[in-house]
Amino acid sequence: MEKISIFDIFKIGIGPSSSHTLGPWKAALRFWGDLEAGGRGGDVSSLKITLHGSLAKTGKGHGSDLAIIAGLMGEDPVEIKPEAIRKIHDGIASRSSFFPSGPGGISFTPGSDLVFDRESVLPFHPNGITFSYRLGDEPEKEIVYYSIGGGFVVKDGDLETEEDHARNPLPNPIDKAADLLYWCRLKNLPVWGVVLENELHWRSREEVFERLLALWKTMKESVARGCSTRGILPGGLGVRRRSCAMAENLLGHPFDCKSEWMTQVARQSNSFDRILRWVTCFAMAVNEENATFGRVVTAPTNGAAGVIPSVLLYLQCFGNPSADKDICRFLLTAGEIGSIFKKGATISAAMGGCQAEIGVSSAMAAGALAEAMGGTPEHVVMAAEIAMEHHLGLTCDPVGGLVQIPCIERNSMGAIKAISAAFTALESNPDTAKVSLDEVVQTMKETAMDMSARYKETADGGLAVNVPVLIPNC
Image 1 (cartoon, rainbow, N blue to C red):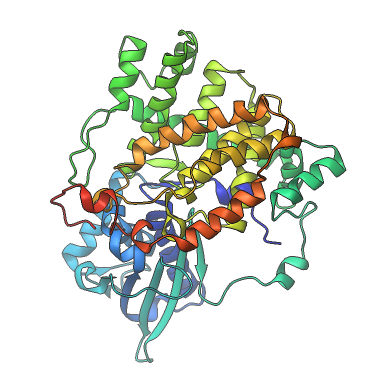
Image 2: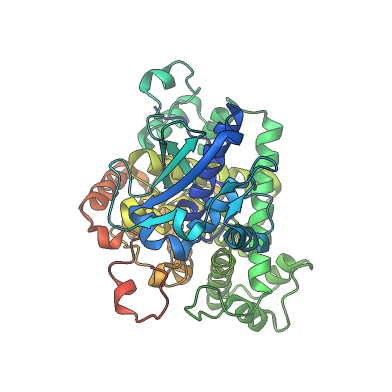
């Protein structure tokens, strides 16, 4: 049984894509970090990097090249200032060399040494990256990494075996929803309680809750920045930010990200139309930030980063305002649902289309909201199932290869579906449900396998080919 922490599902990083920006960034960090750890960083005499498959087809729009350069330079995606990313890339391009480990520079020209190979797809995953390098006069070597979705990176040949997992098992091993329900019933614990026991396998209770609240803080900050920033999104599509104007219209005055804005929102009318507009605004605000290389939390991916924050803000502002511990329980529950989808299907749009991103995030939010509203573990998995059931087959067809159209609006749709799914489950008897979460996960996997590659983050089909654009990003 694969061991995945919720802090693997939720990561703080830079937009616009967890698989095409954060993943390549982490691959470059690992590649150069391994050379440095072995004392060979200073011996590199040549370097060429090739992006394959989906990374090659939409990598320009996702900033994969910028991310790889930042990773080679040892920059931390959690700490770096977003405006510094482009400067790092342009500096290397202007001098055709970089200095990752001291004064000895390595000849490297991004335009020729960082190749977007649109024709080849490596066997393990569509998001492959090949690092070809020489150490002094030694023969050229190659290392391949795969960005498998949600910021997860796998080095070719480094997959763990069942024996590796068996040597150090979690207290509550979970691969499927049925396993989760088994441990909840056996130990008479809610979903978050079972998940917390597993997290304590890696770190203390204090660290778990501290890191969860840091995730929540970052989520709120991304909402606040989005709701207080106007302008045109980068990339050439000319997409105008809308969440700032929406927030201002709803509040009746400019949105001040430094004020107690959540309190101001909560004091407003909780009519259906106002709640709907705020949830839409919150979700779009996060993904407008994501589109500008802003800092967001993968949930489970960057492209779907707006769903969880907007549903949690719905709960805080219009549902049952919760203490810090309740927010942590929400995130623990959501993270485990995301883990079940990753293990049983995929959270990579390059493998499964947008059902793997918005669909999974909506299921995560629905299950967590059901738990927060007093639902049983059975209600939780039912809510997650309902949300995903109505995202099955959703394609990933980014216009211009950018995480903007239809991605930004799609987050608001996923959030609204999550809220509806949670309340549908809470008003139902899970014992009479005809479809289980595990059956939906399997269906999603099979749908992903049947889906044409044109609809898997390649910008070769759907809106990406029917909406005319003039930018050479895809």
